[in-house]
Amino acid sequence: MTRSVVLVHGAFHGRWCWERVVPRLSALGVAAVAPELPYTSWEDDVACVRAAIAAAGGPVLLVGHSLGGGLVCEAGAHPAVTALGFVSALVVGPGETIRKRLTAAGVAKELRDGSNPEIGAAMRVGEDGRIALDPEAAAAIFFSDCTPEDAALAASRLRSISPSSLGGRPGHAPWRDKPANYLFCGEDQALADEVQEGYAAGLTGRRDRLTASHSPFWSRPDALAGVIADWAAASDLEVPE
Image (tube, rainbow, N blue to C red; front, side, top):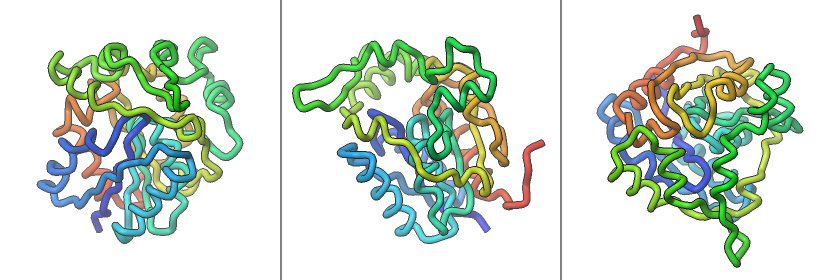
């Protein structure tokens, strides 16, 4: 039975980032929804994802991109979720810091903070305390394989985020007992390949790879939709080769 899909965007993004993927999934016979995270707090973001899962009806494949992987780890404990998917995404367990997980996975010391340090340098804190990204830096880091026009368009649609949303960490680890798939992005300028490997350590699902930047939903939507459709159709008994 093909699962319905709930797509969780990453930090600074919105549901718009899946707008090229959702219709392609539909054409492949896969129903998909992409909630808009409020970015008011971690708790509000989790509630938003849980509401989308409940509205979709089970069984659900819950897919997260980048920081959205943390929300997949938290909301993926919902009983309607029967499989997980991570697109160049964060994966951690309860009480586990990024540095602790990547250290345990043997990731090089200089990469154990997880993301490209240029992302931190590009962050700007507004008077309201919310955090935004410099659009020019974001275009280079997140959308490096897009045309200049496409990268500029995407960067212009990025949003600010609350510190709580940015720093929230899950209290569950459904990836330990549910099929959990990982898509590696081979030209990612935000998460090094070794970091992605560290996050994917211990997952019990498929391991797929695209020659793509951190944002295959924007640069390679056909290929990404194909991967997600395969995840949605996979039997719970399938294991990676």
